Length: 331
Image (cartoon, rainbow, N blue to C red; front, side, top):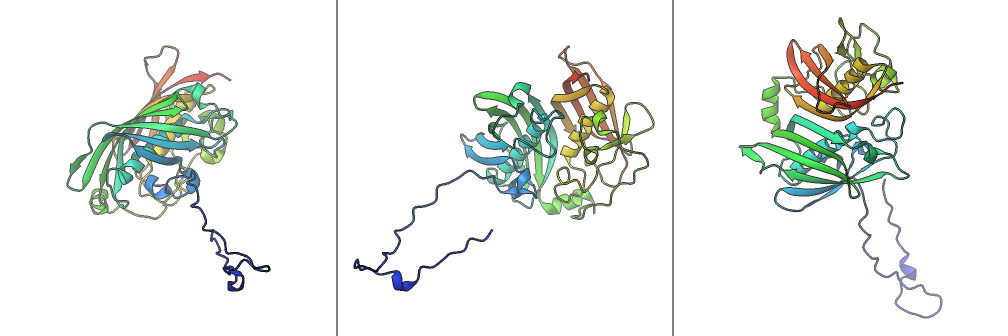
């Protein structure tokens, strides 16, 4: 939006006080500093509406306070009943905090590329309830050791506590490595591209949204495979949230959502909202390779919760592993 500056005619800008003249305006006070989101480039988002961070402050050499806000309604990050924020939104906020601090506090240039190796989160359901206003958050971010630098490569690990007021709403852990674009292109061996890929070839109908804990068919990522507990990853590469911008691989947040959907598909007709998940990313998930998602229930530390281990494979090689924990809601 362009602000137009209107000029007062010179004929009325006089220094006299006699009748018929209008004194010139006093010097305007500086505009107060108001809340806004951080620059979208710092969190690698193309759409301003998908930026959840609003600012940061460095407390010590290794600790930071990051502020964030979640909207009352989000087109993707929402629970089926609409009463709570999606726990995976906590993971996305922690991811954004890592990228933002790397650029603004650790000196990582904006054109460097990020590799995310781990992304874990644990949430408290009561603190995810949607209130009468957007949810303001403070992230207490602890850098585990100083960023490890090797030439132009930076490796760092963060632990995060997400607070809603005085109460913890989530905790998280994430590890990243950053590399210059030239190094990234060599790692990608010619796959580096800014173009969106063609839509995947789908030979079967996607799973019904209710079976994977979603409301809209466009949000479903899985189609049936050849055995129980196995599915094909068939996302819509034009999805405005999951594929916010062009990328040369399937983003980690898409894989995390695929894991959530697989846990729901395995547990159907019960719906599972994963209050916690621990994810390890082994290698890039390529657009042009078939991706198989498998899920199985596994023992967990909470006897009242359901633990599901989800893995993704391309050409027989693992691309990610997620262990999700949640309480099933039997419909």
